[in-house]
Amino acid sequence: MRDYWKEKYFPWQFDNVDSFSYDFKKIKTMNIKKETLEKRKKMTNELITQKKFHEALELAGRSQLRGYLITQTTVIERYKTSKKKLEQVHCREVKNPHFSKAASMKLYLIAEIESIFPKRALQP
Image 1 (cartoon, helix red, strand yellow):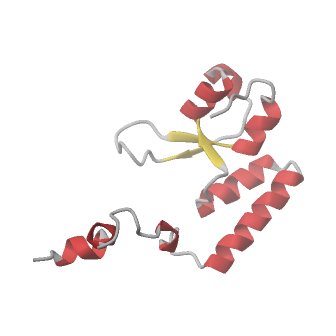
Image 2 (tube, one colour):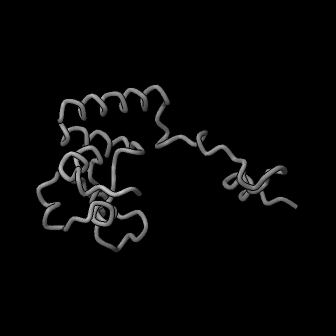
Image 3 (cartoon, rainbow, N blue to C red):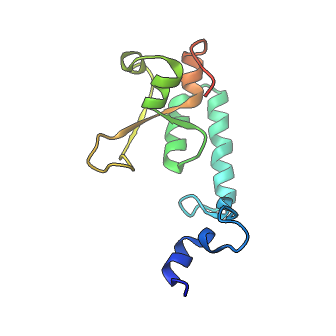
């Protein structure tokens, strides 16, 4: 007997073909229309090409755009830098989604990090 709530919130578990066949692209980010999301991505890309990193960071953070932001820990690991050097870079602090009582996460714009630390970048 199928459980209604599990089937509603975890539909990929009830596929007959494959347990990983659920299309995650159907899930909306923050219930934003696809056209609006594409418009915000275009605006963010324009701000990045104009080197307006602070404005692009705010837009990407407010819209929760994927692929534009990187956490402080990941920056330190990939670019072999320190917290002291990251103080000069704009960041956006958001509530930690994993641990509510932990310190807030610091998010950086990937384009700005790559422009400041180009030679230190490593392959992920």
